[in-house]
Image (tube, rainbow, N blue to C red; front, side, top):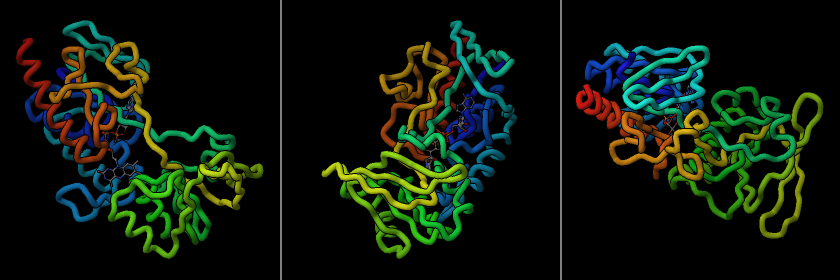
Length: 304
Ligand SMILES: Cc1cc2nc3c(=O)[nH]c(=O)nc-3n(C[C@H](O)[C@H](O)[C@H](O)COP(=O)(O)OP(=O)(O)OC[C@H]3O[C@@H](n4cnc5c(N)ncnc54)[C@H](O)[C@@H]3O)c2cc1C
């Protein structure tokens, strides 16, 4: 039995692994993708202390190496269920069942889909949720970015290095993104904006998308534009399906914790983006991870 199982190897999970293993606890980190979480989908990070600018994947590698320095074990697997048997927690992962005294849920969130016709059909054929992964396929194309927050503007700026033009489509009249990102976008000659518009349909041929239809939020007027690529950044949904039965989530599915990262189940913690929190960033996930990594030590020494 492990002292701690951490579900998810994003910045939060990797920090929790560093702290818990440095306290000499036995730690298993389970990750179903590449270690790094959303960092793997992030172009440049400019707001993580200690680095003027670093790419998401480079930061992920550094965090991964760091998280393993004190003996934490990483394994690949998709967690489908967590069972609470009091002092023992069972983590169901593919064909395995792992046991631990404590569990830290660090499963993060995923991009929200718009849910319009054509979105699913053309995913990977012109519709993308990851500029870092797919941007280079769109050299000299006119791209549309849907959204008005930090991710939309940041990734829109990133796409200008490949695209001939980037149009940011936002449902409001002004962006939500940080001022510094807005200023850069407004100054960038390759970026233009379509305000008060929401996408209603994506159409194309057998191979790829050709058009995007937008509706004006004020007049309901429909406009169809030629589109060669659409990048969607409209928000996040929590990845909490495996934990639904435990009643630790709020109505929207985010996990509720106190300041110690404890859920209402003793020995079960949640950190980072998956938590009901006010800011979903690398620095906050790392902060949560350090608290949980320390709290599990206190909990285990109190029950042993
Ligand atoms: C495009 C983009 C740009 C961003 N730019 C910045 C930025 O510049 N600065 C900044 O501070 N933040 C930025 N962020 C936000 C930042 O990346 C996140 O806040 C941070 O990664 C959250 O870390 P986390 O560990 O909580 O979750 P995540 O990074 O989401 O990691 C969660 C991990 O859990 C794994 N997982 C989920 N479910 C399971 C399961 N059932 N079984 C096994 N593994 C599972 C996932 O595969 C994932 O690897 C950006 C995000 C995006 C998408």
